[in-house]
Length: 493
Image (tube, rainbow, N blue to C red; front, top):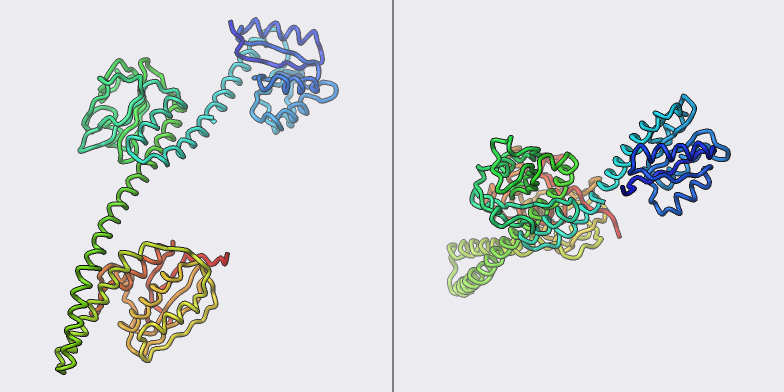
């Protein structure tokens, strides 16, 4: 029988070593023993064997390095390697426990070798499983990187099934994606006959149950499951929901083929699959949204701007020959329509976009914006010299829209104050304020309590969010409106 458990026995008594080796190899023919009479030579042996030693069995009382000192040295380079103290002492040293000895066995009669052989096999199998599960976890996390580059649902599913074969050693794997209340086969391993890869309703089978409940199932014996409808000679299975997208399944032709470790590793793989599908779905939705917005922007920019420009020209020309209150009112209405168009284009073309970020002074940007807005007899007071990271052009949209909103709702003689917060800044006024019920509504697109466009504060929120900031409305210290911007980067790099 081929040796599969390589054991290094260390004891300063050569005759005892020979006896131990003979008994261990007789107890379990898978065990192969090499020996050393001191810890120093044993350490050299461990390194020369190029990590092929699976377990160390060592005496405690030895000249030079004793068993605990030997253990401490091994642990510095081989943290999880099984290390069993096999000693005549009837008490295990406390230092051995704290250093992480795997097991402890007292030398007595020859019957102890049966127990020692069992302990060796158990320790090595556990060590190998832990080590395997650890190249598995690392490999599965690397799969997440691969999945992030896949640009189609099919590509994501096929790469996931490949990983289940390569890393988890699953022979039969399949991914179903839900479409119109059916689970449709999107990818399956090459060992699965195509006749077994059929479409099923989400109301059928273990796969349908996993999809509907959002729970994973480890089935040891499919013949004992009333819900199971295996499409082939399969007797055990794993069934794991892929978020709201579908189901991953692995099956085997023998019962009890999967354990809890298989389930844990498969769930990790499926979590990466679900994340990749979520990402692809978001990208596709964003692409569709951008296409609709671009189309809308073209309509607004061309089909509305041009007629408005013609209308303004006609009204201005008519006003030269005729003075009428109706003309003045028409020009005011026209100005409002032009403002709505401009705000709409900002919202569509620029509200979601932040270009190059740079370090800017809040005070400088705010005062420049104040001069660009018709503020009548209102006043601005900036009490912060704070610098923040922002796109200066987009930051101007925030201040100018807030200033216009203040004048529109607070009156022509309102005072606006700008100050710093621990992680941001605020803009407040001493106008009539915001009612409790309006604090959230004021940022909704089209919401207004006057004859404004209802776009100004929506633009403010959208530009703030594009920077990664949060904006909230509340009362100012004087009872007016206050807008706080938090999560703002104040680094000056």
